[in-house]
Amino acid sequence: MSLLLPTNLQQYPSSSSFPSSTPLLSPPPSTAFVPRRKCLRLVTSCVSTVQSSVATNGSSPAPAPAAVVVERDQIRLGLPSKGRMAADAIDLLKDCQLFVKQVNPRQYVAQIPQLPNTEVWFQRPKDIVRKLLSGDLDLGIVGLDTLSEYGQENEDLIIVHEALNFGDCHLSIAIPNYGIFENINSLKELAQMPQWSEERPLRLATGFTYLGPKFMKENGIKHVVFSTADGALEAAPAMGIADAILDLVSSGTTLKENNLKEIEGGVVLESQAALVASRRALTERKGALNTVHEILERLEAHLKADGQFTVVANMRGNSAQEVAERVLSQPSLSGLQGPTISPVYCTQNGKVSVDYYAIVICVPKKALYESVKQLRAVGGSGVLVSPLTYIFDEDTPRWGQLLRNLGL
Ligand SMILES: Nc1ncnc2c1ncn2[C@@H]1O[C@H](COP(=O)(O)OP(=O)(O)OP(=O)(O)O)[C@@H](O)[C@H]1O
Ligand SMILES: O=P(O)(O)OC[C@H]1O[C@H](OP(=O)(O)OP(=O)(O)O)[C@H](O)[C@@H]1O
Ligand SMILES: [Mg+2]
Image (tube, rainbow, N blue to C red; front, side):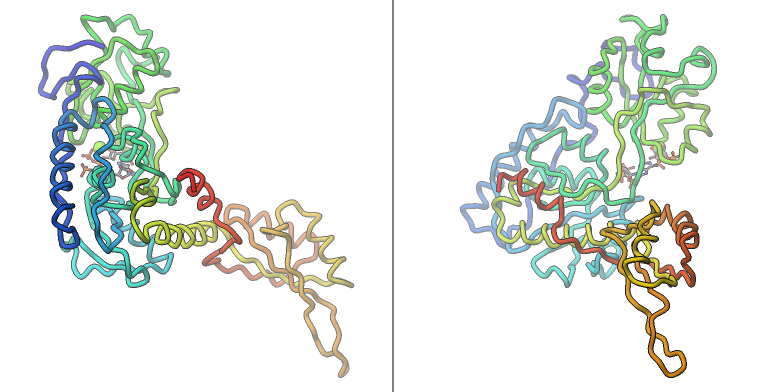
């Protein structure tokens, strides 16, 4: 990777010399609960964080901050303060019956009455990651892209839930769909283009100044130089500033509108919102593990139910067993653990009898129509479909994983 002539974008030669757009500076957390002696240690640790991280977000992995857990009574959860993740994060918590009470949008601290030992702090997503690392936050909701870029594989960061079902996008290389790139459709073809040399490397514009150089290095692409900007990167190729870009894509509209295309092998990562925690907080801060357990249980119950419908149907039959056999003969009707089948009691000529059975199953939303067709095929009628709110399993699989990860 080599240096290119300056342009109107900031240019940096490689991952090792990519300077920071913003230093990892986080203000000391509230000292309200910090005893005096701890206060001194806290300041020391903040100073060392600042000094050691001026070359981020695109340099070598940030060193683990000093292992200090500041004493405070409240567990701190960081939520995105604005942008596309903010409303969805609050809505998700609301769907889990966790109501974030924010008096007005400019107030950066809020409460969740259902979690009395927890404070919400609204921060920019990248600052959530930085503050998890500095110990100023204990938990956070951010995109996996931001976590990877600013967390830089730091072992103190633990992904508690990696798929919160919003903020979906992917980080991808894109090139012009015209000119010398017209017939280039893969990373390999891009790398092998005769145009790139030590003197004239491929110019890649990205805001991902850590992940970009790392990805190119891992893919053996040597003749590349990086530049950065804060947004509207898709303009860079047409402006003649860059040959390619590395940016987030969701609908693909921005690429299309700027005559750019993605290439095979060019996806650096898939991203969506995740619940992230500081390992130190979970192991050392009183109450943090209980809080994360409760949040995780609620999230899992909601997210699992979110993809499912409850389907109730009537079915004529001689016995529950016989109805069950018919239902289970269909591939999409086994539900989560098999159908629940109950007799429907009717009176006929003054006598109570059972001619029908009600069957209840959970059906993935995507398979709803197929399931209705299969139900009809085995004699189902009067099909009622309703949304499912929560599925609380015996155990949350991610909780077990988390405990193993923490060595507990
Ligand atoms: N199409 C998309 N473009 C960018 N980010 C997306 C997209 N879809 C989902 N996301 C998620 O939203 C996050 C960006 O949120 P937002 O746009 O609020 O930016 P930000 O982090 O506040 O950055 P900045 O304010 O510096 O632009 C991404 O990190 C990603 O996880
Ligand atoms: O695939 P799409 O749905 O078109 O979304 C992708 C675009 O959205 C984001 O930009 P953003 O809107 O944050 O603007 P910015 O680049 O100016 O920050 C991202 O950086 C892409 O440019
Ligand atoms: Mg953009």
